[in-house]
Image 1 (cartoon, protein in one colour):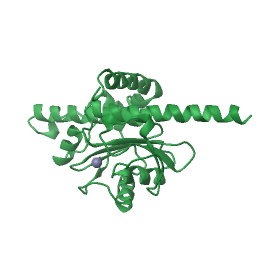
Image 2 (cartoon, helix red, strand yellow):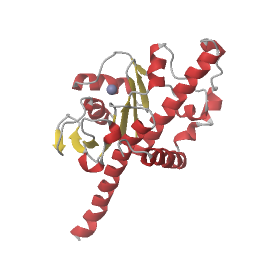
Image 3 (cartoon, rainbow, N blue to C red):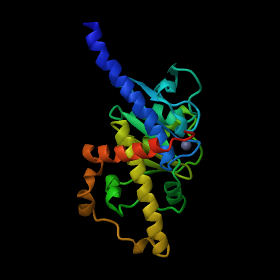
Length: 244
Ligand SMILES: [Zn+2]
């Protein structure tokens, strides 16, 4: 009986490890991170999560993922965790609904924060952020529990936060959605920058979607859309692995 009940759980954990490692490689291969950045996922039903060791997310592997808890302790695995582990630990502590967190330093999103422009819904995938993306204004890395709590507070009940001069963090129910959302947000920020440049730097010349228009695109993170986007991003990451 024991074997029957534990095998599905073990299979689910193995699948989760695979997805977390792949998500890390996706954010690097898709231009959201270089040497720095990390993706984690909560181990279902508890206060622990899979987290990569201290190296580029492009080099993450399922077998080397650590298990951390929401107090920042390493509970399993060998090696040092990335120093911004507090982003993940404190969001999981604050948000029982969150099953995965992506933190990256994508260039277009960082540019938006440093020209003082909030994210605007200007294309279809941007509609996923219809409710706005708050900004965490304080510069610098999130290397303490207190800063992790501040970031989690700024994120609030939403799915994404921009971090001034630093990057982005997304938080969703599962690792595929959190990863796809991060890719969509950076794509959206990149288009916003190009539109702003084409508009002579005048935000008033942009044509943001109305609330009603953006509502029609709320399904940008529906499971079927996420599945298709994940398939694509995973193929990109696996076709040309870093160092492969
Ligand atoms: Zn960072």
